[in-house]
Image (tube, rainbow, N blue to C red; front, side, top):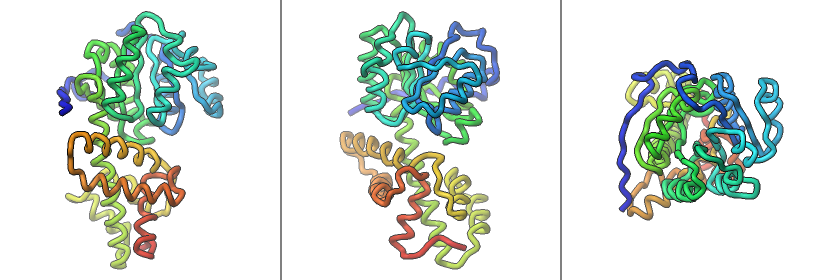
Length: 321
Protein backbone atom coordinates (compact mmCIF):
# COMPACT_ATOMS: atom_id res chain seq x y z
CA UNK A 1 0.00 0.00 0.00
CA UNK A 2 1.21 3.51 -0.87
CA UNK A 3 0.99 5.87 2.10
CA UNK A 4 1.45 9.60 1.69
CA UNK A 5 2.32 11.73 4.73
CA UNK A 6 0.47 15.02 4.32
CA UNK A 7 1.56 18.18 6.14
CA UNK A 8 0.16 21.67 5.84
CA UNK A 9 2.98 24.12 6.39
CA UNK A 10 1.95 27.16 4.43
CA UNK A 11 -1.14 29.18 3.80
CA UNK A 12 -1.27 32.56 2.18
CA UNK A 13 -3.35 33.71 5.13
CA UNK A 14 -0.33 33.34 7.44
CA UNK A 15 2.35 34.35 4.99
CA UNK A 16 3.60 37.67 3.72
CA UNK A 17 1.63 39.37 0.96
CA UNK A 18 1.76 38.07 -2.57
CA UNK A 19 3.65 41.12 -3.84
CA UNK A 20 6.64 40.61 -1.53
CA UNK A 21 9.96 41.58 -3.12
CA UNK A 22 11.88 38.76 -4.71
CA UNK A 23 15.02 40.20 -3.09
CA UNK A 24 14.42 37.72 -0.27
CA UNK A 25 15.42 34.84 -2.52
CA UNK A 26 18.44 34.02 -4.61
CA UNK A 27 16.19 32.99 -7.49
CA UNK A 28 16.09 35.58 -10.26
CA UNK A 29 15.80 33.65 -13.51
CA UNK A 30 12.73 31.49 -14.12
CA UNK A 31 12.02 29.37 -17.17
CA UNK A 32 8.48 28.43 -18.17
CA UNK A 33 7.57 25.66 -20.62
CA UNK A 34 3.97 25.39 -21.85
CA UNK A 35 1.97 28.55 -22.63
CA UNK A 36 -1.54 27.15 -22.95
CA UNK A 37 -4.79 28.19 -21.27
CA UNK A 38 -3.21 27.86 -17.83
CA UNK A 39 0.49 28.30 -18.53
CA UNK A 40 0.29 31.59 -20.39
CA UNK A 41 -1.27 33.66 -17.56
CA UNK A 42 0.82 31.86 -14.93
CA UNK A 43 4.02 32.79 -16.77
CA UNK A 44 2.76 36.33 -17.28
CA UNK A 45 2.22 36.70 -13.54
CA UNK A 46 5.83 35.68 -12.95
CA UNK A 47 7.03 38.33 -15.38
CA UNK A 48 4.84 40.94 -13.72
CA UNK A 49 6.17 39.78 -10.35
CA UNK A 50 9.69 40.86 -11.23
CA UNK A 51 11.34 37.61 -12.27
CA UNK A 52 13.53 37.44 -15.35
CA UNK A 53 11.56 35.08 -17.57
CA UNK A 54 12.54 32.68 -20.34
CA UNK A 55 9.72 30.85 -22.13
CA UNK A 56 9.31 27.95 -24.53
CA UNK A 57 6.18 26.66 -26.21
CA UNK A 58 5.86 24.04 -28.94
CA UNK A 59 3.37 26.28 -30.73
CA UNK A 60 4.92 29.67 -31.45
CA UNK A 61 1.70 31.71 -31.54
CA UNK A 62 2.00 32.63 -27.85
CA UNK A 63 5.38 34.30 -28.16
CA UNK A 64 4.45 37.81 -29.28
CA UNK A 65 2.84 38.69 -25.97
CA UNK A 66 5.95 37.66 -24.06
CA UNK A 67 8.31 39.40 -26.44
CA UNK A 68 6.43 42.62 -25.77
CA UNK A 69 7.25 42.44 -22.05
CA UNK A 70 10.90 41.59 -22.56
CA UNK A 71 10.83 37.85 -21.83
CA UNK A 72 13.50 35.76 -23.51
CA UNK A 73 12.22 33.32 -26.12
CA UNK A 74 14.06 29.98 -26.06
CA UNK A 75 14.42 27.65 -29.02
CA UNK A 76 14.27 24.51 -26.85
CA UNK A 77 13.72 23.31 -23.27
CA UNK A 78 17.51 22.87 -23.10
CA UNK A 79 17.96 26.58 -23.74
CA UNK A 80 15.37 27.38 -21.08
CA UNK A 81 17.34 25.38 -18.52
CA UNK A 82 20.67 26.96 -19.43
CA UNK A 83 19.41 30.42 -18.54
CA UNK A 84 17.23 29.60 -15.51
CA UNK A 85 17.53 28.91 -11.80
CA UNK A 86 14.12 27.24 -11.80
CA UNK A 87 12.30 25.65 -14.74
CA UNK A 88 8.51 25.22 -14.57
CA UNK A 89 6.63 22.95 -16.95
CA UNK A 90 2.88 23.27 -17.43
CA UNK A 91 2.09 20.74 -20.15
CA UNK A 92 -0.75 18.35 -20.86
CA UNK A 93 0.28 14.85 -19.77
CA UNK A 94 3.12 12.56 -18.73
CA UNK A 95 4.41 11.99 -22.30
CA UNK A 96 4.72 15.77 -22.69
CA UNK A 97 6.65 16.01 -19.41
CA UNK A 98 8.90 13.22 -20.65
CA UNK A 99 9.53 15.07 -23.91
CA UNK A 100 10.37 18.48 -22.47
CA UNK A 101 12.50 17.15 -19.64
CA UNK A 102 14.25 14.12 -21.11
CA UNK A 103 13.74 14.30 -24.88
CA UNK A 104 16.15 15.68 -27.48
CA UNK A 105 17.18 19.20 -26.44
CA UNK A 106 15.32 18.59 -23.19
CA UNK A 107 15.83 20.32 -19.86
CA UNK A 108 18.32 17.72 -18.63
CA UNK A 109 20.66 18.64 -21.49
CA UNK A 110 20.87 22.14 -20.05
CA UNK A 111 21.34 20.94 -16.48
CA UNK A 112 23.63 22.95 -14.19
CA UNK A 113 24.37 23.11 -10.47
CA UNK A 114 21.41 24.27 -8.38
CA UNK A 115 18.76 23.83 -11.08
CA UNK A 116 15.21 23.11 -9.85
CA UNK A 117 12.39 21.67 -11.98
CA UNK A 118 8.77 22.24 -10.91
CA UNK A 119 6.21 20.10 -12.72
CA UNK A 120 2.87 21.92 -12.44
CA UNK A 121 0.98 19.66 -14.84
CA UNK A 122 -1.22 16.82 -13.59
CA UNK A 123 -0.19 13.18 -13.86
CA UNK A 124 0.35 10.69 -11.02
CA UNK A 125 2.33 10.14 -7.80
CA UNK A 126 4.30 7.32 -9.44
CA UNK A 127 5.33 9.48 -12.39
CA UNK A 128 6.39 12.26 -10.01
CA UNK A 129 8.57 9.85 -8.03
CA UNK A 130 10.17 8.44 -11.18
CA UNK A 131 10.79 11.92 -12.59
CA UNK A 132 12.43 13.04 -9.35
CA UNK A 133 14.75 10.01 -9.35
CA UNK A 134 15.82 10.58 -12.95
CA UNK A 135 16.45 14.28 -12.40
CA UNK A 136 18.42 13.59 -9.22
CA UNK A 137 20.87 11.59 -11.35
CA UNK A 138 21.64 14.91 -13.07
CA UNK A 139 21.79 16.76 -9.71
CA UNK A 140 18.49 18.54 -10.46
CA UNK A 141 16.00 19.12 -7.64
CA UNK A 142 12.31 18.48 -8.29
CA UNK A 143 8.90 19.52 -6.98
CA UNK A 144 5.53 18.23 -8.15
CA UNK A 145 3.16 21.17 -7.84
CA UNK A 146 -0.14 20.77 -9.72
CA UNK A 147 -2.76 23.49 -9.41
CA UNK A 148 -6.49 24.03 -9.17
CA UNK A 149 -8.55 27.14 -9.80
CA UNK A 150 -9.07 27.08 -13.56
CA UNK A 151 -8.19 29.71 -16.12
CA UNK A 152 -9.61 32.47 -13.93
CA UNK A 153 -7.35 31.51 -11.04
CA UNK A 154 -4.39 31.41 -13.42
CA UNK A 155 -5.16 34.92 -14.69
CA UNK A 156 -5.74 36.38 -11.25
CA UNK A 157 -2.79 34.65 -9.59
CA UNK A 158 -5.20 33.05 -7.12
CA UNK A 159 -4.56 29.37 -7.84
CA UNK A 160 -4.35 26.75 -5.12
CA UNK A 161 -1.00 24.98 -5.49
CA UNK A 162 -0.34 21.62 -3.84
CA UNK A 163 3.32 20.69 -3.56
CA UNK A 164 5.33 17.52 -3.01
CA UNK A 165 9.09 17.20 -2.68
CA UNK A 166 12.00 18.27 -0.51
CA UNK A 167 10.88 20.79 2.09
CA UNK A 168 13.95 22.99 1.73
CA UNK A 169 13.50 23.15 -2.04
CA UNK A 170 9.85 24.08 -1.50
CA UNK A 171 10.84 26.92 0.82
CA UNK A 172 13.41 28.15 -1.69
CA UNK A 173 10.80 28.22 -4.47
CA UNK A 174 7.94 29.63 -2.40
CA UNK A 175 8.37 33.24 -3.65
CA UNK A 176 7.86 31.96 -7.21
CA UNK A 177 4.77 29.97 -6.30
CA UNK A 178 3.28 32.96 -4.48
CA UNK A 179 3.25 34.96 -7.71
CA UNK A 180 0.93 32.36 -9.24
CA UNK A 181 -1.17 31.18 -6.32
CA UNK A 182 -3.04 32.39 -3.28
CA UNK A 183 -3.08 29.16 -1.30
CA UNK A 184 0.19 27.24 -1.45
CA UNK A 185 0.17 24.00 0.53
CA UNK A 186 3.18 21.76 1.13
CA UNK A 187 1.78 18.23 1.22
CA UNK A 188 4.88 16.16 1.97
CA UNK A 189 7.22 13.92 0.03
CA UNK A 190 7.52 13.69 -3.75
CA UNK A 191 4.23 12.57 -5.32
CA UNK A 192 2.07 14.08 -2.59
CA UNK A 193 1.21 17.06 -4.75
CA UNK A 194 -0.02 14.81 -7.54
CA UNK A 195 -1.95 12.60 -5.11
CA UNK A 196 -3.68 15.69 -3.74
CA UNK A 197 -4.56 16.92 -7.22
CA UNK A 198 -6.09 13.56 -8.15
CA UNK A 199 -8.20 13.66 -4.97
CA UNK A 200 -9.27 17.16 -6.05
CA UNK A 201 -10.25 15.85 -9.48
CA UNK A 202 -12.40 13.12 -7.94
CA UNK A 203 -14.42 15.81 -6.17
CA UNK A 204 -14.42 18.19 -9.15
CA UNK A 205 -15.62 15.56 -11.61
CA UNK A 206 -18.50 14.47 -9.41
CA UNK A 207 -19.49 18.10 -8.76
CA UNK A 208 -19.52 18.66 -12.53
CA UNK A 209 -21.89 15.74 -13.00
CA UNK A 210 -24.08 17.01 -10.15
CA UNK A 211 -24.26 20.47 -11.74
CA UNK A 212 -25.28 19.07 -15.13
CA UNK A 213 -27.85 16.68 -13.64
CA UNK A 214 -29.42 19.38 -11.45
CA UNK A 215 -29.85 21.72 -14.42
CA UNK A 216 -31.22 18.95 -16.62
CA UNK A 217 -33.72 18.02 -13.91
CA UNK A 218 -34.75 21.63 -13.37
CA UNK A 219 -35.17 22.16 -17.09
CA UNK A 220 -37.36 19.09 -17.41
CA UNK A 221 -39.55 20.47 -14.61
CA UNK A 222 -39.95 23.76 -16.43
CA UNK A 223 -38.04 25.86 -13.90
CA UNK A 224 -36.38 29.19 -14.60
CA UNK A 225 -32.78 27.99 -14.53
CA UNK A 226 -31.32 31.32 -13.47
CA UNK A 227 -33.60 31.31 -10.43
CA UNK A 228 -32.72 27.66 -9.82
CA UNK A 229 -29.04 28.55 -9.78
CA UNK A 230 -29.77 31.41 -7.38
CA UNK A 231 -31.32 28.93 -4.96
CA UNK A 232 -28.75 26.16 -5.38
CA UNK A 233 -25.73 28.43 -5.02
CA UNK A 234 -27.06 30.03 -1.83
CA UNK A 235 -27.46 26.82 0.15
CA UNK A 236 -25.96 23.45 0.94
CA UNK A 237 -25.94 22.38 -2.72
CA UNK A 238 -23.51 25.10 -3.75
CA UNK A 239 -20.16 24.29 -5.33
CA UNK A 240 -17.53 25.97 -7.48
CA UNK A 241 -19.01 24.11 -10.44
CA UNK A 242 -22.53 25.42 -9.88
CA UNK A 243 -21.27 28.99 -9.42
CA UNK A 244 -18.89 29.01 -12.38
CA UNK A 245 -20.09 26.37 -14.84
CA UNK A 246 -23.83 26.54 -14.17
CA UNK A 247 -24.28 29.93 -15.89
CA UNK A 248 -22.16 28.78 -18.83
CA UNK A 249 -24.34 25.73 -19.39
CA UNK A 250 -27.49 27.86 -19.33
CA UNK A 251 -25.95 30.22 -21.90
CA UNK A 252 -24.86 27.23 -24.04
CA UNK A 253 -21.24 28.31 -23.54
CA UNK A 254 -19.08 25.21 -23.71
CA UNK A 255 -15.73 26.91 -24.28
CA UNK A 256 -12.99 25.66 -21.98
CA UNK A 257 -11.76 27.01 -18.74
CA UNK A 258 -10.55 23.46 -18.20
CA UNK A 259 -10.80 21.06 -21.12
CA UNK A 260 -12.93 17.92 -21.01
CA UNK A 261 -10.00 15.97 -22.45
CA UNK A 262 -7.89 17.01 -19.47
CA UNK A 263 -10.35 15.87 -16.79
CA UNK A 264 -10.69 12.61 -18.72
CA UNK A 265 -6.90 12.22 -18.56
CA UNK A 266 -6.82 13.03 -14.84
CA UNK A 267 -9.54 10.49 -14.09
CA UNK A 268 -7.53 7.91 -16.00
CA UNK A 269 -4.77 8.32 -13.40
CA UNK A 270 -7.34 8.21 -10.59
CA UNK A 271 -8.62 4.88 -11.89
CA UNK A 272 -5.08 3.48 -12.08
CA UNK A 273 -4.41 4.35 -8.44
CA UNK A 274 -7.84 3.02 -7.44
CA UNK A 275 -7.11 -0.28 -9.16
CA UNK A 276 -3.69 -0.57 -7.54
CA UNK A 277 -5.04 0.24 -4.08
CA UNK A 278 -8.28 -1.76 -4.53
CA UNK A 279 -10.49 1.29 -4.03
CA UNK A 280 -14.17 1.43 -4.98
CA UNK A 281 -14.73 4.89 -6.48
CA UNK A 282 -18.06 4.52 -8.28
CA UNK A 283 -18.69 8.25 -8.67
CA UNK A 284 -15.34 9.00 -10.30
CA UNK A 285 -15.63 5.86 -12.42
CA UNK A 286 -19.05 6.94 -13.71
CA UNK A 287 -17.79 10.37 -14.73
CA UNK A 288 -14.75 8.78 -16.38
CA UNK A 289 -17.04 6.65 -18.51
CA UNK A 290 -19.27 9.62 -19.35
CA UNK A 291 -16.16 11.58 -20.34
CA UNK A 292 -15.37 8.77 -22.78
CA UNK A 293 -18.67 9.71 -24.45
CA UNK A 294 -17.78 13.43 -24.31
CA UNK A 295 -14.57 12.72 -26.21
CA UNK A 296 -16.33 10.35 -28.61
CA UNK A 297 -18.83 13.11 -29.32
CA UNK A 298 -16.01 15.43 -30.39
CA UNK A 299 -16.15 17.69 -27.34
CA UNK A 300 -12.70 16.95 -25.89
CA UNK A 301 -11.44 20.48 -26.56
CA UNK A 302 -14.53 22.01 -24.98
CA UNK A 303 -14.89 22.72 -21.27
CA UNK A 304 -15.78 20.05 -18.74
CA UNK A 305 -19.35 21.43 -18.76
CA UNK A 306 -19.71 19.72 -22.15
CA UNK A 307 -20.72 16.73 -20.04
CA UNK A 308 -24.17 18.35 -20.11
CA UNK A 309 -24.40 17.62 -23.85
CA UNK A 310 -24.03 13.87 -23.23
CA UNK A 311 -26.76 13.93 -20.58
CA UNK A 312 -28.95 15.88 -22.97
CA UNK A 313 -28.39 13.25 -25.64
CA UNK A 314 -29.31 10.46 -23.22
CA UNK A 315 -32.49 12.33 -22.25
CA UNK A 316 -33.33 13.47 -25.79
CA UNK A 317 -33.85 17.02 -24.56
CA UNK A 318 -31.78 20.19 -24.07
CA UNK A 319 -31.20 22.13 -20.88
CA UNK A 320 -33.37 25.20 -21.42
CA UNK A 321 -35.38 27.37 -19.12
